[in-house]
Every structure is written in structure tokens, then in C-alpha cells.
Image (cartoon, rainbow, N blue to C red; front, top):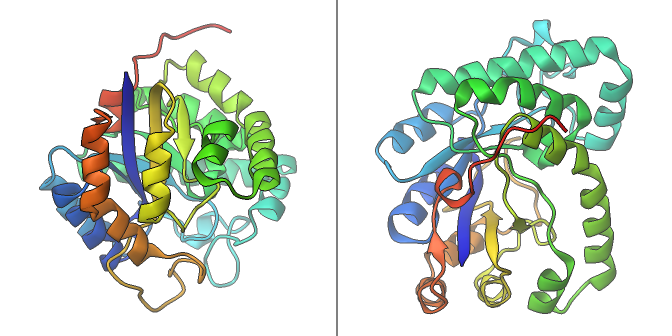
Length: 292
């Protein structure tokens, strides 16, 4: 059996993103959305989500390229003079690894983000991180501690399988190979900590190598090459571009990604392949807590 989770990241980032999530869930193939609890349009996202009973809403933990939930004065080592997180995940992640004070502040901020999600009243469908920062050793440790309080939500393991990804696209083999090797190594600790905490994980993820370019033609090819098990395909959809510092990268194509989610051709392909569409909690198998 092939189960498919279709996720929109950055839920709450802007009204065009929120509108895309709502419409793609109601009329397209979207099954889940990852909420940024400190984003500008968070309240609007929560209001929409409460009306969409089948949409699986998870938390999109943010420590880079965004704003904190806590006042900047409480996390001074995590933000710049503008009160925003760093846009350089490598530099920030390295500093976080070596600084005990930064890790303390990061734990306070992540705890605040979990608490902010709790206050929405929504059931937490899954956990992931903006720019996949949840796989950082300091962050995965916090996740393993906090997640059981939220009903043991599943955690995204961001490793895109090499051969299905390349067979579906026939491009950038060396880039896909490098990505697969990097994320395979970086997520080992995350997977181990999730298993120890009794948190389920997806089998595969797609969208990692083509982030911002999950267009209809690419999605159709990926659907033909999904392996058996539970796969997640994630998108960054929006109904239009918007101004401001919180806009998506210039090379992203959010309107085209939204069109892919709404595509009648994609919906027909899902039906023809008899794929089971579901949010995270319904798609992944319950995990057994281990002591490994």
C-alpha cells in the first residue's frame, strides 16, 4: 500500500499562503499544513484551520529566517538588531552547537512555540522545522522532550530517496546524491530520538531537492515513482506573491505550486494510482517507544 501525505509548509506566513492552504485542502490534494506560530498571519491561519476538520495542522518550528514568539529581549543571542532570526542556518547552527547560552535560549523559544500551538486548541498533527532546522541536535533533543505532551505527534524525517527522486526527474543526479548523503547523516540522531520518545516518522519525503519548484509536471512524475510505504510531498503554495521581508525566496514559484495542488490532472493521477491521501497522524504507523 502507498500512503501519501501532502503538506504545505509556512502556514501563517501570509494571507496568500493561508488562502492557498484552505483552497488546496478543500478542492485539491492537500492533507496537512505546518503552522509557524510566530508568523504575521498566524491568527488568520488558525481561524481557517478550525473550519477545516480534516486538515492535519502541525508545528513548523522556526529558529531561522523568521521572528520569535518570545520578546527579542528574552532571546538576544538568537536574533539580530531587527529582532529577527538569522538567515544563515549554517552559521547559526554552528554557533548554537557550541554555545550553552544559545541552546538555553533556543529551548525557551521552542517551548514558547509549542505553548503557542497549544493555545490554538488544534490537535498537533506533526512536527517539522523551517529549513529543516528540527534535525539540529539541540532542537531534536527539545522535540523529544516536549512532543509526548502533545499526544506523540509524528516527526518529519527530511530524507528524499535518491533513486525514486532521480527516476522521476532525470536531472541533477550529483546534487540529489549529495543531498541524500547529507540528510541521511544529519537525520540519524533525529530518527533515533524520535523512536526513543515513541514518535512516528514518515518513510520518505519529496520536495527537498525541488523546493519551490513542485510544479504540475514534476508532481505527476513523482507520483508515478512513489515507493511503497508512507511518503510525504511538501509544497510552498500561495495564491499570489506579497511584499515584505517575509516573502518567499525570489526563485520559488508559490503560485505554480498552488496550481499543482489544485490540478485536475494531479487529482486524477492520485486516483488512478489508488494512493491513500491522509494527514500525518492517519498515514504513519504508531511508533513503539524504545530504549535504544
